[in-house]
Length: 228
Length: 330
Image (cartoon, rainbow over all chains, first blue to last red; front, side, top):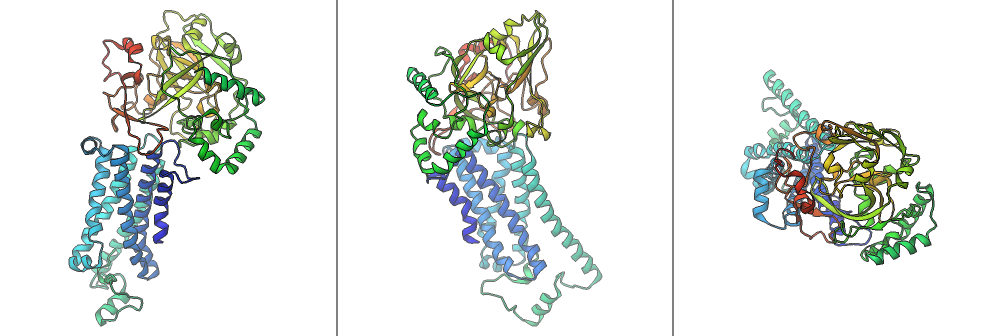
């Protein structure tokens, strides 16, 4: 999985440095921008898929994957921005500042990147422990980032909005799932069947009895905090 | 310049001339050479010579054309490779990806081809393209091409001045604009099944723009018949305007009194105008037009280049727009 996520970046690097058989086509910078951008969005969708999968399968393994995927989102977003800064605009900070301020779609993209920074910094287990409940609230920013990413894509496309529309639909589904879950949790809390608002009574029981799940590892996230 | 002409002649002699329609054999040949020549192609690509272009990257069955070179109206910059020009195209009738037209345009039948001429002119009717070509001798012109998306190329077109063609129809004084219409045939043009643009593609020019010596009706590329993905069999090129003004697969020419409604301006009037003159001072609402990326610059580290007013043709065309507010009439 770790290597798998690197493949798109390696392919671009191979093309950029003239490895035989790999071509980036007539407009390589544009292709690199496009590829790094779409992989940011795809990996973001994958990241958001982890909690639903955890809920469906009950396995915490998905959550461990989630951190790695999330950091890859940041990686590709950084690559995307660096390509824009260095390859497209020759590293001219004044030029890109002008773009960020004047071109709305670039403003949105830059904002999305900025919001990913605190998420990347607090991705460690240590940070999660320090922040406690605040960690979950902070990391809800990922929903904002998803929205900004899709909007950024939508706004830069000349006419064919079908690709950004597809990503919008995927994120809507992933976010809609969480919203439905939240409504259900609210409903259960009102009825008093899950006092902590946890939707998995097994975890609640384990937590109260001090039982650690069999596949827990040191550095694992605390399931109580994993509201998703 | 003379060297290239000699190369064309010997290459055309080496490859037997065939009907201008692309046959299935050509597809077989290029697939085979693609499979076999991975390493060789990469090496030859860097030579940038005609030999590399001939090596599986052109369509050997495209007919060679007879033409004169017009150095006076050509730029001195080296043209882009045949590979780049024929595989990086905006031609939504065949799909919206840059690689779609090269893949999907091969089904288009380019003969027999009729151009219907109508409107405010003494001579109107339907004319076979081959008859039009008999009375309009060809020239090669190397022009800059600037896309509204902020990339550009240098292309060696082969064609004839639009002015000469239009004079043959004797437009009346009521003809203030010329409207062009492209083919509508979703069976041959799969992209027309989507509503990404309104079909058929329509473009237009003011009569003085149409009569300008730079405005070219194009039928060829690099000395041979124009490939389908570049607008075969007949397309317009107006080098001082954004590329979308260069309507492809032209089937209709109409002399009209009022400014035509053009496809891109109709799809998004705040972003695409009728005049579409290349202008670094007037940005697209969503991106800057002050610079462009020159395709085929070599490495990915090549810088963007500043965009020139009227795509570098200001001396020849700026006079057409004196007194006009080019920000309003974009």
